[in-house]
Image 1: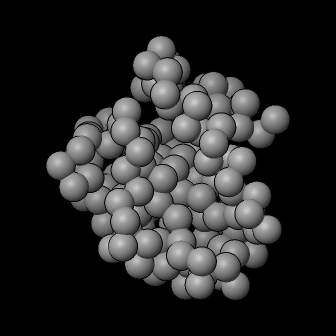
Image 2: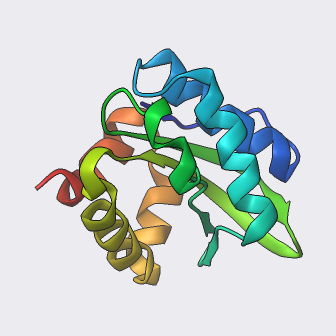
Length: 136
C-alpha cells in the first residue's frame, strides 16, 4: 500500500489520499477516513522530519476491518499547518497493533539518513524495502 507519487496538494487531500489507499486495500471502511479528519481537527498528526501520520479517532475502531498501513510520498512538500510534509502514513490498527507500528515508523523517520533514502527511492518496492523493519 505504497504510492511514491502522491497527487494531493493540500493537507486535507493528502489525508483523503492516504485514507483511500486503506479503503482500497480493505483495511478500513470509508467512515474511517472521516474519522481521520476528526483526529486532525483535534490534534495535528505532523510528526516532524517531513512525516505526518493521520489516523482515526478511538470512536472509529469499528471502521477498522484489519490492521493496515498506507504510505504516500510527495514530490512537492505538502503544507501541513506550516510544516513541510513529504510522507503521509495512514494507519489503522486492530487491538492497538498500530502502537508498535507507530513506534517503529517514528524511529525510522528520526534518522535523517533514513529519510534521505526514502526520498531517493525510485519505486514503491524500494520504499517498502527501506521500511521493512516496520513489519518485523
